[in-house]
Image (cartoon, rainbow, N blue to C red; front, side, top):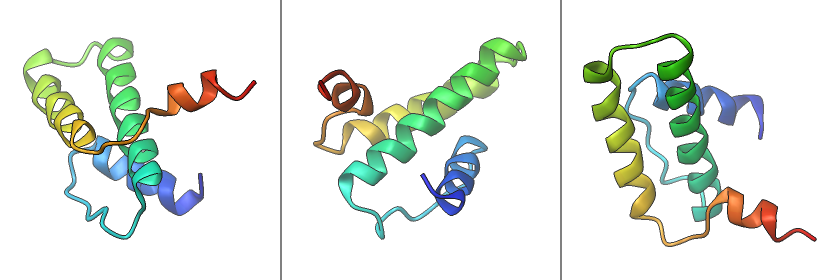
Length: 80
């Protein structure tokens, strides 16, 4: 993942609206899944408020669910 894409992940994690139309589906999956996991990590690690974080996590899951492509984990498990 490029530094530019990592910044997009951070922005999405922070709740900014980013246009992902320039990315193909596997890239969108990577960006959204990483943003979700990063935000979820911060939620537990920093003890953030569920009321503040849960809606953002839900929005990320909904966006991700609209992309008909396998998850990154799927790809990693099938690299053998």
